[in-house]
Image (tube, rainbow, N blue to C red; front, top):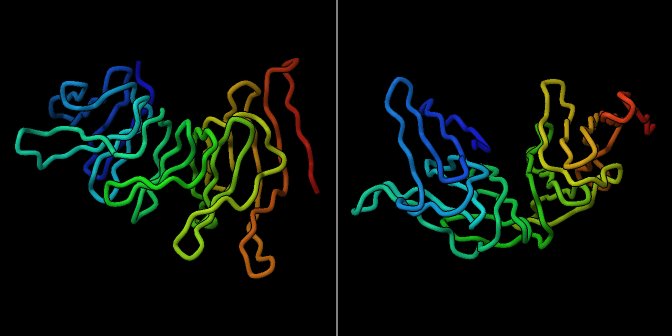
Length: 219
């Protein structure tokens, strides 16, 4: 079972599976990494950050140590023992969504930012400093101030378990929920009291209730 695919800067395809991760170099042969290579648990997300490949699994977060004298092996990031769902590369560090909250990984060390179960992380195209974190019951906004991440509020119109978030070319957000369909949000970033604020302009909900689309105008 393949949970996630990721294409790195070298055009290699990485596939997260129930039993490890696979790397495909087209037209080169397939490489496969599993517990024998140090990678434990079901793999949910894979990303390369600052040249290092990371994998989020049901057993935590692992990174690929290509300089290991005993051969290429995965090593575990200390400080994250819970199920890890999603990785987000933010340039000089890496954020990970887990069952016990959001962590920042920097220099192979983990620092906990929040303590609530988080499924997914998304950096806004309109303001990369604002991170959306998909929770069991909605979305929290994260912002970095003076070198420290903190939760700065919630998107009030979202109260479902949010499993993934994408942003289209028009700047709209599409959010996949666990049980209640898809949410579509148009938003803007406004400066209020010298701070950048996330403002919801319009929401639509798509589900299978009577085969209809539900749309709600908020302003």
